[in-house]
Amino acid sequence: MGKFLNRLYRHFESPGVLNVARNINLEFSWVIEAGCHDGQDTLKFASLPNVEEIFAFEPDRAAMAKARQRLRGHQEIVHFSDLALLDKTGFVSIYDHYGELGTGNTIFRFSDIYSENTIACSTLDIEIPAPKKMECSGWM
Image (cartoon, rainbow, N blue to C red):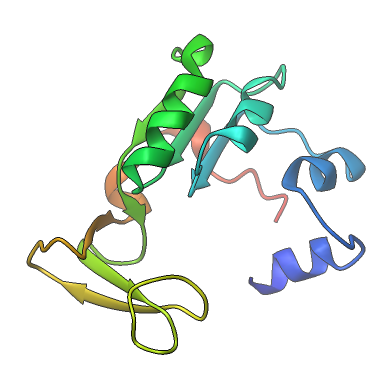
């Protein structure tokens, strides 16, 4: 999870990002949600008064459809993207530790070729070029 997030989460038994942010009085104006699933957490972010933009990524078409429906009243701030946000561009197959397509201890297999078992992926730098207002403010 990274050293910073491990330090941040260590005092929370079952952390939700919003609970952690509230407990340390963290304010933010934009959110990048890599895996918004059905939009349940995205809706919580969209309801915060200071949030101006949300970038929601979800490669699962059925889950994304639910997220779009759930957030239909927040289209002005939520930007949806139907792909996986990873460290490479192209296509990826996600396998569990037994080598079968699924979830669990995941293994990513990258490819430049689309197949029925792959999902499109891209990087944060490509999908969201950082404007001035999104530069890190140094709180990390």
